[in-house]
Image (cartoon, rainbow, N blue to C red; front, side, top):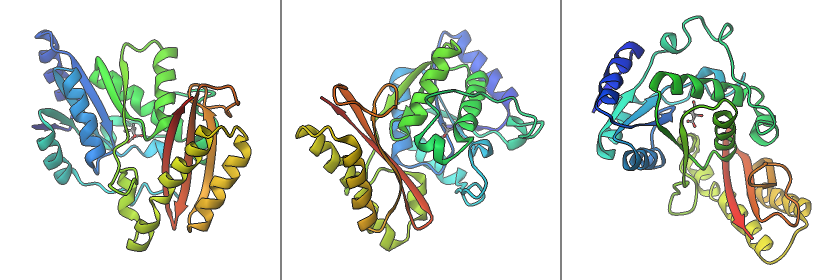
Length: 282
Ligand code: PAF
């Protein structure tokens, strides 16, 4: 496994692979890898001849007061984990390589509509930062396909729309959320939780499951269900950011005759913000 820091070197290597007719898969990450990321790399390796895993903590997608400074940078450990996932090139560019003129002068990509609401409302500018860096990674790597986790449901929808609208020649592949034994979705931010908070954290997924069960039982009073879910989160010691029941495709409030519904949840435990989701086919 090889780690590359410069774009020039990456392009030279990838040109060689392309010349041999090999397909390229990209797994964009911010590092601090866990089994969820490793599953994305494995999926990319099943679908493409060469996998590039990018590791870059993207400052543009963090808002003021968020966890950019404390976000764990663990390149050595990440390299060990990726070594076990199979043959991947690691692309870990420096900040200067990605934003040579600084963030303020960087051209940005805005994906309207699907970026509104949910995390887009709670974290203004977040999806512009994600869409911009993913566009740049696509241009740097020029992959045939790119794999993203379904845990970040709205992010995946933003990237799919961006690729469609800008006619980017990349197949966007979603991969299922990987969970701890107690249901907590794997996330780099779980590492921020104290031992007590960690015991409470699975309540997010339990609340999603309980609400999905009520919908399966025939309830369509979605606003009432959202309030009940937020109350359950609050009772367990979480501070709900949102619990939204949406049409899986548009991410707008679900209507009773929607066939595909997704429950989107975000909640704070202490200072840690957890997100998760669950889709229901009716
Ligand atoms: O999901 C993430 O880790 C990030 O948002 C991504 C897609 C790597 C862009 O920085």
